[in-house]
Image (cartoon, rainbow, N blue to C red; front, top):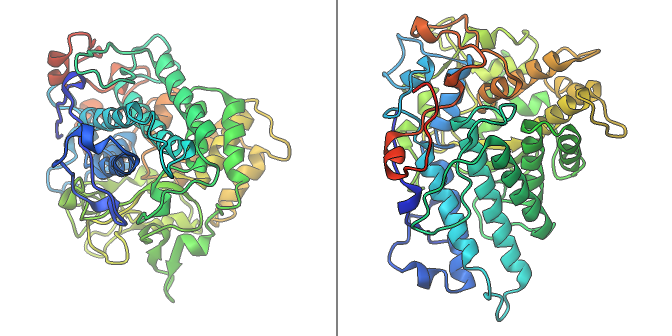
Length: 482
């Protein structure tokens, strides 16, 4: 497990150049922050540059997704087809000197977003309007909220453990600031506060100009979708359903059909799927990470595709626990490939690369329409009310487009099952187990027997904070059990 040790107190901002291919630009380090942030053009380019962190191998470029799947029971290390990677995640074998590297990346994003927001005031001169500045601020608020959201899911217990420590919610770039950890409840309150402000100030039709992938930057629907998720995790069922409905009712998004999800040849073999598309201009995708080998943060051979490919390292295979959940007619079963040279073993094909088929150019979908239907279905079962909507109809929207069996009278377990099947290998199931307070039970398992199953509650559901961070900031309290 890679480690990135970057103290919040000593972070320095890294800004990026911007152009039509800003998502793949290298850091611009030739000018001072003062010069770069002195005008709208520099602020705009700097905001664009923050997105490049999303491709980092500790975040959506690889480990954040892969570690979650390997820990959740969806993944398996097939010992005959692996390179020695992903061991710590699969075995839940973490320590303060071997933990997720996302802490450093997450706080880089947060620091950069804060730095931009601190310099927006007074830049509405010439043709630059207050709305232009508000759009940049909304992007930064979203990115700050998303980074904190993913941090608290990794390094803290679930929202139900309200007294538990979360992560520091950082809103400053003061180099002397050594924050203590906020509680989980406080972190979620700040996440929602940031997103609500972003929703309020962003232009309803705002779309960042000159981008490689329009779905890879912040828009109003992306903010609303993340709000639905935040309310889901914090148990505010009505707000969760309300915000899911805002996205569902947005005509910009449509549910993938079975034929769109997976394209078959004349023999019924999957030859293409929707996840290989270079740019999602229509369909389910609300927000995604745009992957490109030219991005200075792209992990290249450590990318998700090479880790989930039989032809690559192959360390992150799919467990039979997951694959066997799908009936033969369910088109989602065809998203798992079993090579002739490895019969009975499966790998996800959600990271097959783009049309170029290279191993380093995957997009990673972060928010999509199916999740909104699942969020709303769960909220409705838990007492939310949306006129004209029901858990039956919301689940049917998914199952009818996957050639899957419909639910007639769904309960919470049915929603959880459908979440696992629909969102598999997109980094959700581990955190679903944590937020609903369920233990991990694995059958198709090839790791250390000690951590085959993980009870709930357990200290293990919150990863250790790195020792380097603890040494740099004496106000950080360690997680128990490490």
